[in-house]
Amino acid sequence: MTLRQAQGERIIGVVGAGAWGTALAQALASDGRPVRLWALEDGLAEAINTTRRNEPYLPSATLAPSIEATGDLASMADCDALLIVTPAQHTAATLAKMPHFPRDLVLCSKGIEAGTGRMMHDVAHEAAPGSVIAVLSGPTFAHEVAAGLPCAVTLACGGGEAQWERLAPAVARPALRPYYSDDVVGAEVGGAVKNVLAIACGVVEGLSLGQNARNALITRGFAEMLRFGVARGGKAETLNGLCGLGDLVLTCSSTSSRNFSLGKALGEGMSAAEALADKRTVAEGAHTAPVLARIAANMDVQMPIVEAVNELLAGASAKDVVAALLARPLKREGLSV
Image (cartoon, rainbow, N blue to C red):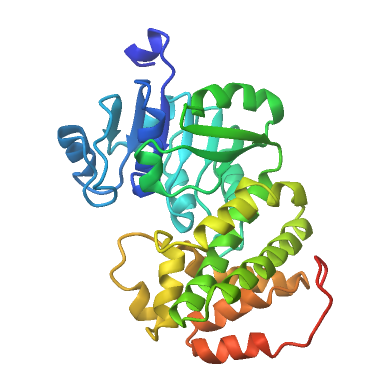
């Protein structure tokens, strides 16, 4: 137990000092409460503590003095709760290095593990079977959250209302408003699928196909999200909320989205290898699309837009993929078709 905990201050930990992890730490420290932020890269924790800035990932923000950065992952274990904000493809490896865990783990990364098809809550349950898993997800751009602009998120608590009563006061701030859900699966599906759909919307922008096309794609993409989420055991009402439809609309409408920017580059003629090269930040949709397409096919869930993105990332022409989507047979509009 640290001195600050002994004095009654609850410390929340953020594992991952990329743009989103740093923004969450900044939001949580906005009222002066202590936040511990773990950074993987050598020297980054020291630089944050010395300069109050994270130049590689979030240079726009001057970080609050109550943020304590560390490069020692073991030191995170005595926090009262941990927000896990490592990229989805590295979450299992990061959790495997933790010596032990606090009671509450809040998953904030959006994706599906490419090699295994596991959702992040499955990864966390295996690594930390004694912890209670929650998911924080919603329409949030890191630079806006770090700047203190208002946002709302879904906080899906696998431990139900008892976990919500512990976590809500630790997470809620005047500009960061969580809404309760008990649907961890639905919250994770929304975050994972929207990344892939954002790539598709970026392609529409890159090909200059217009606003009509992009909004049609968002609507039909949302139908795919609903089909897959319900088939995986999530709730339609969850996906109709902040972590599904809300996040989808945001990330499909702005170049501030890494996935949208990737799709835009593909639509403008860049290859996937070129678009993904030398990127410090991660476009999770590029990792999620192949595994999502495979899982959907195995479950007999129709996701033609996701399949199209997968083909694009494998090297297909953006114009050819769009033409194939437009040539699909005419059908009734609805969730099940």
